[in-house]
Amino acid sequence: MIEIKDLCFSYQNRKKAKERKEIVHNLNLTVKDNEFLCLLGPSGCGKSTILKIIAGFEKAEKGVILDNGEEINDVSYERAMVFQEDAVFPWMRVYQNVEYGLKARGIEKAERDEIANHFISLVGLSGVENQYPKELSGGMKKRVDLARVLSNNPRIMLMDEPFGALDAMTKEKLQEQLLQIWEKTKKTIIFVTHDIEEAIFLGDRVAIMQPISFGGELHVYDIPFERPRSLAIKENPQFQKMRRQMIDELKEYESF
Ligand SMILES: Nc1ncnc2c1ncn2[C@@H]1O[C@H](COP(=O)(O)OP(=O)(O)OP(=O)(O)O)[C@@H](O)[C@H]1O
Ligand SMILES: [Mg+2]
Picture 1 (cartoon, helix red, strand yellow):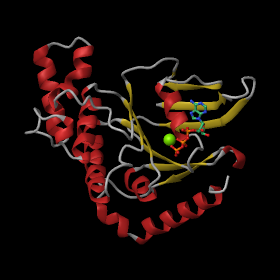
Picture 2: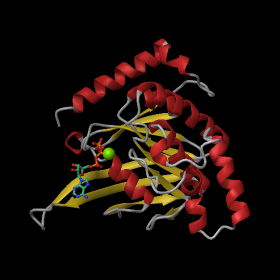
Picture 3: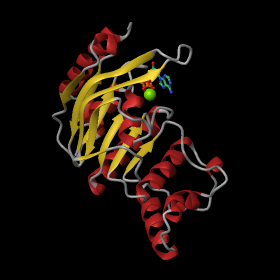
Picture 4: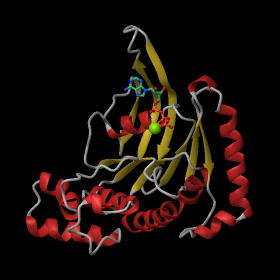
């Protein structure tokens, strides 16, 4: 369980060293184990910043973030970040990319092979293990990235617009695949997106983050659709109604 308690964070103003720009103000949020939480909000409101603090890349200025009751104050392979840009090494083949983290952790060859092959197959990349990233499509590269992250067996995945750069069809395929993987592996996922439909389709809850000029609070929607979900729920009138509500809420914050 992740508990964010009265979190405050600001960046130093680059031009005026003494000034700080407040990004997060008294934020509270609890994410349960195996929950899929989506985070929406206008550009620049601080979504990526929150993920970076949870990952341990940035430190809370006030308040705390607890991971299973322990304060987060460093990075850990148990909390993995997935970015919009692929974090794959272009000079390594698919297989080497996936086993990279395992090797870095000193895991022996036989076990590495087993784990890497398992996740390559789980994301549907069997057969292209020996290709280089440049020989793959955008969606396939994203899958390499997912296999790479999953092979380290993180408990928590912090995903920052991971499908933002993909075309609509590829995106939907990966959304379905991510849900299947999540259902099998029981990860806790915090998923930042600009795509409202993506958020409702994937999430147990969707949190909309207000810009700080509107109070910086989170407005949390419970998503009632049963699991496993199929893409057909996007046509459901209740889905469309929630989508409309979220669009209207986000429009309010557009001009912050
Ligand atoms: N390293 C930094 N130094 C100073 N200011 C920063 C830094 N990183 C981000 N900011 C500022 O903090 C604010 C929040 O940035 P953040 O990247 O968290 O927003 P976001 O909600 O993820 O936006 P987007 O939806 O565009 O990705 C922005 O105003 C940004 O300019
Ligand atoms: Mg961002």
